[in-house]
Amino acid sequence: MTGPLHGVRVIDLTRVVAGPYATMLLGDLGAEVIKIELPAKGDDGRYGYPVVCGVPLAFAALNRNKKGVTLDIRTEAGKQLLKQLVAKADVLVENFAAGTMEKWGVGYRDLRLHNQRLVYVALSGFGQTGPYSQRTSYDIIAQAMGGLMGLTGFPDGPPIRGGGALGDFIGGIFAAFAAVCALRYRDHFGAGQFVDVSNMDAILSMTDNWLTLAAVTGQKPPRLGNRHPFTAPYDCFQARDGWVVIAVGNSALFRTLMSAIGQPELGRDVRFKSPQARLENFEEVHAIVQAWVAQRTVEEVLEVLGPQGANIPCAPVMEMQQLVNDPHVRAREMVVEIPHEKLGKVPVTGIPVKFSESPGAIRSLGPELGQHNREVYGELLGLTDEELEQLRRDGVI
Figure 1 (cartoon, one colour):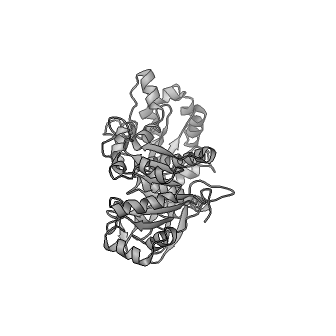
Figure 2 (cartoon, rainbow, N blue to C red; figure 1 turned 60 degrees about the horizontal axis):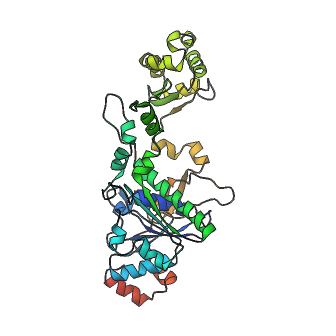
């Protein structure tokens, strides 16, 4: 096992997306992650997504680099086993509704009695405090309440949820970051701590400073679609066979763009001479660029405007099928193929942070339900086969 978190053991009580992504990041960087699921049923993330040969693909990708055990921590025997695991762990991550673990008698105050150095990360929709703390949440709730949906969409349309489970993944990133920070604190002072992470907080912190701008200026953040509030053209344009984005951040780039599309005089036109002027005449600017792009394929646009041409910041809008085989993505090891006994080699996204001395690694896809029961309970906790069988019969594991 490699990675900067080698030697760190994580107890993973998370489910669905946000929490599993946080613990996946820790596992990618070398931590030993023990994922706990309910007996028989397992993580809800195993269901509702495409399944191939009986393998839930999204679950397998999101829960890579984890050992999987079953345990019902609501039972007395389950609580005792959890406490034994915690005594041998560094980090516990859970994403139940606020107060759930306390209600079951295995909250932070209960578990720290068995490990004073425990870093306990609680990830929830609205955090453990505040008037919204008891509300339930999903990705779209976090995006709506955190302000992201209010910024996203076209002016004449409804607010739009960011593609994918963006709110969940952002919360997961902050939870993983918080765990590492708390471990750093523990290294210095010897004590674990409770870490409270809210998806709403995480989203709000990444809304382009509009909270400050709105509070001080009174200006309501506009929904601009793909446009930029302070420059133009900065948008998505339809070519004959796909879509491209073109981003012009200053007037010099605008003049270069106009020359590249054969209309250099427009670069000197008073209507378009400054960023503010181009914003005031946005529709006309957009129409000029769109008319030129519409006559060409994506590749032809990039040949003229890209690095080998005018060197205007521009790019194709990539589809997932393209990204799988994209040479830059492959060169950056952002597609990694992991062997699976039923599916053969399965491509998954790689590790987005590269360490020169302690690189992370993707070692395995997500576990079968209870796959590592014998290894974890037998080797780590010392339970016998007879004890494991009794726990199975009792529905504890």
